Image (cartoon, rainbow, N blue to C red; front, side):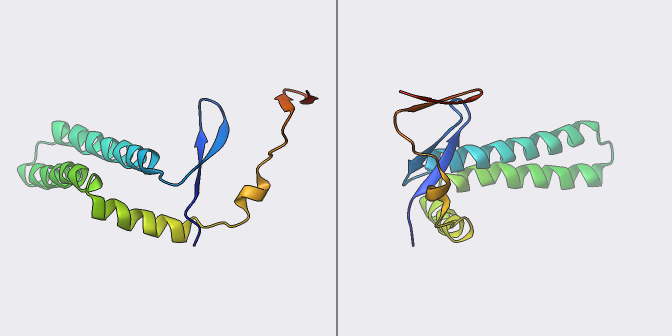
Length: 112
């Protein structure tokens, strides 16, 4: 099984090859954990019913505990193993344009 990942850089709008995508995986997990925590925290601030508040507090506790799990090496290893199976696309690198001595411009290519 191939152990290469391709990541898209939003700043440069280019793809880059990496063997360890840990930074982007962890950033993505933390982004969704942050969104979920904010959602449940906002609900908790507005909720008056004590039973529902306890349920929301349990959800918040779950997402807070998930932060620690994302930094666990075994959790990360399992996640990468699943991603390798799910995201495996052997022909992806052939779809990338690797023409050297060309610069992409708005209306075409410029041959250096």
